[in-house]
Amino acid sequence: GHPGAFANGRAVTRRREPGDDDDRGDAAPVGDAHGAADRLKRLQPTEGVVEAPDDPHKLARTYVAERYAHPDHPRLVYYNEDFHEYRDGCYRRMPDGDADVELTAAIKREFDRLYFEDLEAYRRAMVAHQIAMKDGGDWEGSKPVPPKVRKVKTGVFNDTRRALRSVVGVPHTYQQPCWLTPSPDAPPPRAVLPAKNALVDLSSVAIGADGTIDLHAIKVIDPTPAFFSPITLHYPFDPDAPDPTRWLTFLEEVFPGDGESQRELQKWFGYLITMDTKQQKMLYLIGRSRSGKGTVVRVLTDLVGQLNCASPALMDLAEPFGLSNLPGKTLMTITDARISKDDKELARLQERLLKISGEDLSQINRKNKPIIEMKLLTRIVIASNEVPAFRDPSGAFKERMRPLRFQVSFAGKEDPDLFGKLRAEMGGILNWAIKGQALLVADGGFLVPRSARGLVRSLQEAATPLHVFLYDCCMTDKDATVTKDDLFLVYQWWCLRTANRVTPIQTFGKELPIANPEIKPVRLRPRERTGAVDPFEPAGTGQRGETRQQAWKGIKFRPDVLEQAREAQRRKEERFQPRDWSSR
Image: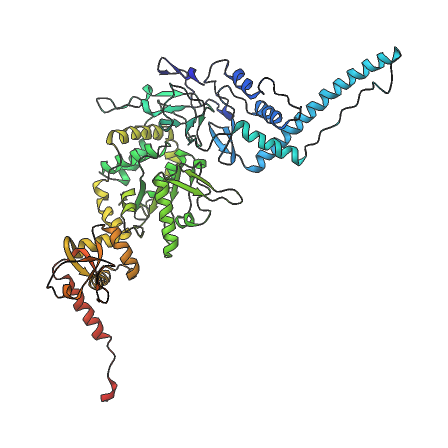
C-alpha cells in the first residue's frame, strides 16, 4: 500500500518543484521502507513450489523484478489485452514489438546468467573430480557433464509471455483511473489530477467565503505507479505560478464583456484536465473564421498533453476502426466537422458520440487484435464555423451539447506569436483551470451563457427539425386526430418554407413518436372521417373488410396551417399539370 502518502489526514509536505526530474517513475517512494521487499517477496513462488531454472513463471518474475520493480507497485501491467508501462507519471500502452524485444532480451540475459552459473558449478565439479581421480576414482563414471547453452526458442518466449500476463495482469473490471494498491487515506481516483510533478487532490480544492481559492491548501501526492492512470499532464503544478495575464486578455478579446462565456470556458478547462466523465456533455465552439476557436483548442491540447489527445475528422469515427485510437485518450478535439449525407454513416457516428459522452460501454475494434469493450475516458470538443446538421429526433444529442459562441473575427489582425506567448503562461493557465474545476463543482454543472442561447435553437433546428416543425405547425391535444396524409402534406410544405430536407414518409412515421411519445398511430373508420363520431382505435384493430384511414392521435394543426399547405399543393399541381394539345 502507500499509507505514507498522508500523515494525520494531510498530504506529504515534500513537493516536487517544477524543475525536478521525474524520469521513468523514479519518484520518491509513497509506501513505507519495507514496501519493495514485501512486493518482491510476493513475486516469489509460494513455499513448497518446485520450479526449474528456466520455468516460464520464474523467468517472468525475474524480468519484472529486474526491469520494473518499484516500492509501491511493479511498473508493468497487462490490461485489456495489452502491456502498459509506467513512465513519466502514467501508464502508456507498449507497442507489441517493444514488449517482445524487451522480453526476449531479458530471457537471453537470464539464460546467459544460468549458463555462467552452471559453468562455474561445472568447473568446481571438475576440480573435485580431478582430486578424486588422483585418489583412484572412476574417471568415466563420475565425470561432470559440461553445461549446455539454453536457446530462446519460440516456445520458451510464448510460454514466458503468457506467464508474464498472469504475473502483472490487472482485471478488465478495473476502470481507469484507480488505485492498484488502495489506501483508506487515498483520494477518490476521479478527483486526482496527475500533473507532471505531483498527483493533485482536487477534492481538497475549496472556494473561500470571499470567493477565492487558496492553491497552497491543495493536497498533493508524489507520483506513484500505484495510481493506475493513462495520462499525466504536460505541465507541473506550481501554486506560485504567476497569473496568465496574456491568456486573460485573450479571453476578454474573444468574449468582450461576456463574463458568463469566460466562466463557462474556465469550467470546461477544469473539467477537461481531469479524468471525470460524469457531466456527460460535449463542448461545441461555434463562430466565424479567425475568431479564436483554434487558439482555444491548441492551448487546451497543449495543457492536457498531445499524447493524451486524439484529433480525428468527425466522420472518421464512423469507420470500423474509428475508435481504436481512443483508449487512454481523455480529450478528443474535432476541427473538421463536415458531416456525411449517408444516413447509415451518420447514424453510426451519432451513436458512437452519444455512447462516449454518456459513459456507456463502447466496442473498440482494433486491427489484428481482439475487440474490447470498455468505458472511454474521452471528452469531446468540437470546433466549427457553423451548426452541424445531425439528425436527432429524440433530442438527446441537443441535450449533450453545450455551445459557446465566438462572435469577434480577428481576420487581418492575427498575432502569429500569440500561441508562443500563451504557452509561456501554461503554469498559470493550469492554476486557472484548477479554479475552474472548483467553479464547476460549485455551479453543479455546465450552463449555457446568454450569448449562446440562440445557438441552442439552431442546434435543435439542425439536429431535430421535427421538433421545430411540431412547434411551428401543431399543438398537442390528447383527443384530437389528424390523418397521416394531411400531416405529411403540412410537413412537406413547412420544409419548403424553411429550407429543410424532406424526410421520407417512412422515416417520418418512425421519428414522429420518438419526437413526441404522446402521439400514437391510429386508424379511422369511415364514419369517423365524416365527423359523426370521434372515437379512435389503435392501428391493427377493427372489423374485417372496413377501409380505415391511417392517422395520428394526440395532435392537431395550428389555425390555417392545413389550408395553407393544401393551397400550396393545389398551386403546385396546377403549375405542373400537363397541357391539352388536342385543341390546337
